[in-house]
Image (cartoon, rainbow, N blue to C red; front, side, top):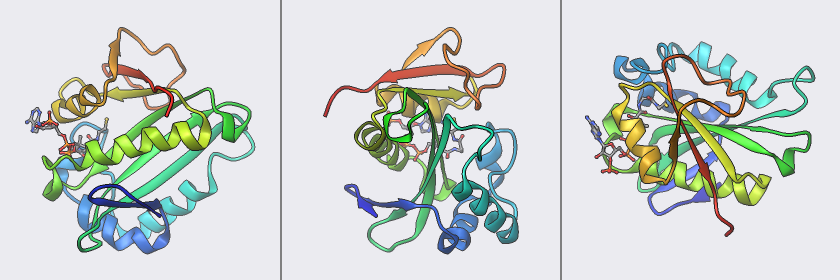
Amino acid sequence: MTRTERLIVEPVSHDHADGLLAALADDRVGAFIGGPDVTSVEALHERIDRMTAGPGPDWPEEHWHNWVARRATDGVVVGRLEATTYGPVREAAEWAEVAYVFGPAYWGQGYAHEGTSWMLDHLRDAFGVRECWAAIHPDNARSVRVVERLGFEQRAAPARPMGSYDEPDLVFVRFTESA
Ligand SMILES: CC(C)(COP(=O)(O)OP(=O)(O)OC[C@H]1O[C@@H](n2cnc3c(N)ncnc32)[C@H](O)[C@@H]1OP(=O)(O)O)[C@@H](O)C(=O)NCCC(=O)NCCS
């Protein structure tokens, strides 16, 4: 578990299923990410199993990291953070792609900025990642704002084989500085 200024961030677990459903079961969440992020608590439990199991032996250079963000004042789940790091050694990754999904009830309060900022620092400190990519639908203005404020720069096309990239996404990259 980690504390940021206003959030508790912890690896996703089955304890979070009800909270994730309450926060993210809203049509607005899926508008620019290809459909709903959550559907039922049963499906969430299955997904949490897959998230924690990771990509498996067929993808030895791919590592999954998933966290849940809870509001520190009352413990309510406000969203989740995810990253895929790439490289033969988990603790010394070459690059990563990141994403974040927060509940509409909590939008516009800087939680995505705060959580993603922590995630970028953590990816650098724990896994050596300095090159982070994000793919964002062009109409997802809030998400574009999140990466811009974090210092990402737009690129014409992904320079890495990003699993989250689909036409006509915009792509952004940030080279994180040393601590
Ligand atoms: C994208 C998302 C994570 C943003 O969450 P959030 O907690 O509202 O983000 P923040 O409050 O940290 O920042 C939002 C920024 O968008 C701005 N914003 C708010 N409404 C906006 C709008 N209608 N148009 C453009 N920008 C807007 C805010 O002012 C803020 O910018 P600022 O930091 O310069 O003030 C959230 O909307 C979400 O989860 N959407 C659904 C899932 C998704 O699309 N994830 C991104 C996948 S790439």
